[in-house]
Image (cartoon, rainbow, N blue to C red; front, side):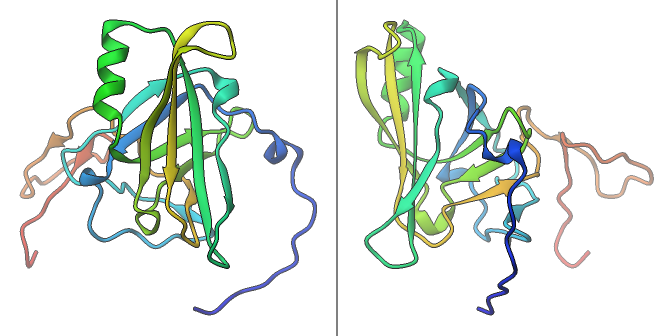
Length: 194
């Protein structure tokens, strides 16, 4: 791999802020495409989910969402970790937590100041292992749970992301249609050799 070193000056003030939005979008690693797209300028620009797979979300305390990629034991590798405090314990939240616990996921988050989205848990890290680390009283004083998302070490555990967030089942459009509009909701699957 050819490295392209350039000067790196002072960064824009907004990019220094660690103000993340309260919502993380997730997808199970089983729903991720087999051929991961190549990043351009540290950015993934295409949908990385298989056709018919949607993102789901988890809302939590925005102050708790602080993604951090720390140096690993292997030189040149980083391990991404995200914690999110989920305030409130209900039948629905407890069931959700029990079901996600132990799953490997891909995560998307957004910076409030810059509106830049990020994607973490790239396949080189094996996805992020979702682990419920506690259920009970949180540091905020509310009842809730802490969900930890942690990836294995890899050289590129997260990227900027400007692809779509798929929240609805894709609209199927026949490949032989003469006129059609491209939207985030639409996904086109053409047969081989076309």
